[in-house]
Length: 256
Image (cartoon, rainbow, N blue to C red; front, side, top):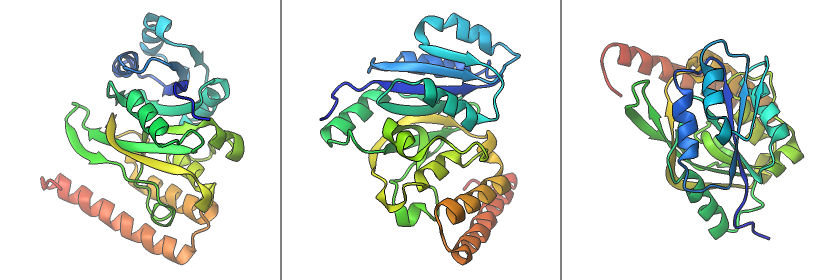
């Protein structure tokens, strides 16, 4: 039976995020859909992060302040204390567009997707000055996505049953843990795509480390995705060449 008014758990991991957290929290507060809980997992910040959390405590359902082993460890803590039917993760420097949650709920209800495991959309990748660079986000497709992760993960919706059936994030990953989780169900994953832009994600962060990103991706697709290592190696080299070529062109002032 479709839950027309599902509770959405929004999980934000923070660590010394004082310069960006306010915008993130306010983007949640300003959602037109109000049936959500905001959970903040802080890794022991020493800047103004805790002060900001205190300033907005009436809007925060639960928060934790303790050392962790990285973002996926923090997210796992959030999942464990969440109560939502659907769970979404946003970075402390990400912001949701005002109708993001409402758009997702309408899409899920209108498509009778209440028992799906994952629903994603599109996002704006922005500079640190909040200038839009490009739009990212494609549908999850097992054959294509096992080679290349084209989904926009920030703000995407995970039904609680994906964690119940396949476990929490693997904290051995530092960049691709969200991707690895989606590989676990294999071809049987129930995934849908909403062709709307729901979030702004700031450029940079751990995912900006190209070599480490591609190494983790290779491990995920060959171990969890069980992709043939010959194809995975070929694609690894191809993507790495494209990444460094684009980096060189950008440094030369060529916009691509």
